[in-house]
Amino acid sequence: MTEKTTTSLGPWKTGLVVFLLLLVVVFIIQNITSYQVRFLFFQFAVPGAVLVFVAFLLGVVIALITSARRARAHR
Image (cartoon, rainbow, N blue to C red):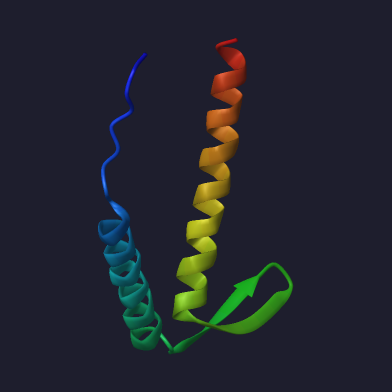
């Protein structure tokens, strides 16, 4: 019979989440300035924080698609 060792990371995880949320809030507050975005036939104003967030999400989606293809190729 094997014993499972558990570590108490609860407070560390909570602290890390709070710290990251504070960083996100500071980032959003500092990047409220709107930018004119022109894409194909569209033109609209978007806050800087939203532009960075959308770019981040696109990067995550591309990374997930790429890793899924690699995992499928290794089967």
